[in-house]
Amino acid sequence: MNIFDSHAHYDDDSFEDDRNLVINELKENNIIGVLNCGASLQGARDSVKLARENDFFYAAVGIHPEYAGTVDDKVISEIKELSKYEKVRAIGEIGLDYYYEENPPREIQRRAFIKQMELADELKLPVIIHNRDAHGDTLEILKMFPQVTGVIHCFSGSVEFARECLKIGYYIGFTGVITFKNSKKIVEVAKEMPLDKILVETDCPYMAPSPNRGKRNRSEYIKYIIDKLADIKGVTPEEISYHTVCNTKKLLNLK
Image (cartoon, rainbow, N blue to C red; front, side, top):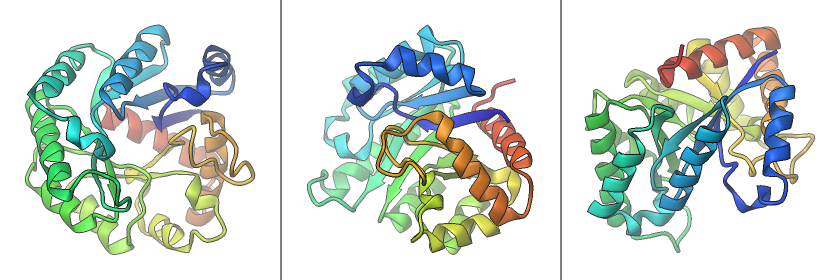
């Protein structure tokens, strides 16, 4: 059963001591693709480096809403420059996060989000969307760019919000959260989503699925997400694997 991890952070410091070992083990465990997503400018640079060094890695470059205050013309210019590398397949992770009070003011987040959506539109690249407690504003901004598509990563909204995202061509990304006991809302979303619109992701090193909850996450653990989705949808894990690999390749314009 093949796995394409549509959202990972192997540039994270938690992999500092054994990154190469972990990545080599991924290859041995049917991980056929990893999209490593930048959160900061340095994270974007490191994601590109990982894509250059590992044949099954691809990069998304962008600035997470936590760092929205850093987004200026110079940063946008460097992201654009990084995007010229052929294995940069998306702009991200970008979006809005209204959950943490210490995050930049909402207007600063919105400005940074719009600037990066404009860049994705210009470069004809899909986007990796971070949305936490900002469903209305996120949807409003996405609708400003009808030519751009992408994925709502680590989806945390309602069935209604998911349907609105599908209407404008977005995929829905499922993490290990779907395996948690208190994940009824996400299970309901999964029930309603067509197989050709779902992606699977680790968001590693975070969000490890049960039975590894609390541990450092890694791409092999997606098998637990696939098993859970198969159970919810009443299909085989192999069918979920097939669709999620195809969907990720389609989103990232990979053969």
